[in-house]
Length: 277
Image (cartoon, rainbow, N blue to C red; front, side):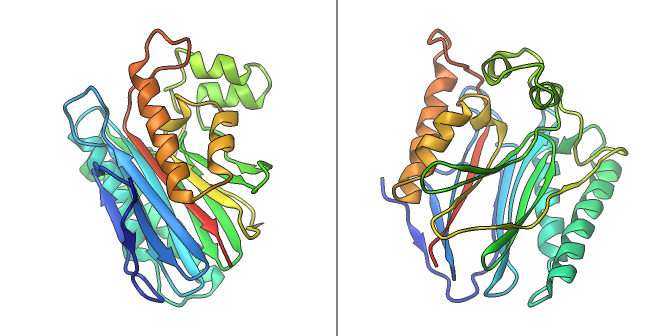
């Protein structure tokens, strides 16, 4: 399938996906590259998608990419993820400097945390967010939603560390990736928006080289595909086709309980950006 192109001029309007269930990928054109978005609900559960995603331009050089994975097991999970998206979109200033943009993102996350605690008790959301300023990015991370930066030749330039029991075990060298993919406690996270103990992991600036690919993904992807599989698919070829292939393989795995591969049905959301100039 060929995704529709969304040409929106030099400064596109914000693209917000709330409880999305897309049949095909969505392309958002930006001045220095393009974003491909895909999201589908849990394949075997008759409930709304609790993931949300957004592309929020702030200037011709600046934008914010967001994937939020709602938690709660009910409609409130989707509402929590939507709250994160809305607060970030409302806070983001137009044509600001780097410090103003960073402050607005942090304020948006803090405000989302307050609103979820007061209005949606018992629910929460993870967050993977990346601000981009021309050829530089900065990641913001809460929970187990993944952020990756991959070079054209497959070099892993950045990977977020999952704020989970299993993620901490992998980082400490106590669990290898294969064990982590099949671990019964993989879903237990240690940090989320909607918690009085929420912490924001703010990464250092990272230069994004031409043809590098940035990927934000909910755990519907990382619970079903290995890191090597993800890198092998996302690093080359048309970006929309790569996202489509990742989504197809992840959803196939969700149905293959006897294949020997991990099989964890879940909502699935992908946001990929490739710098082209």
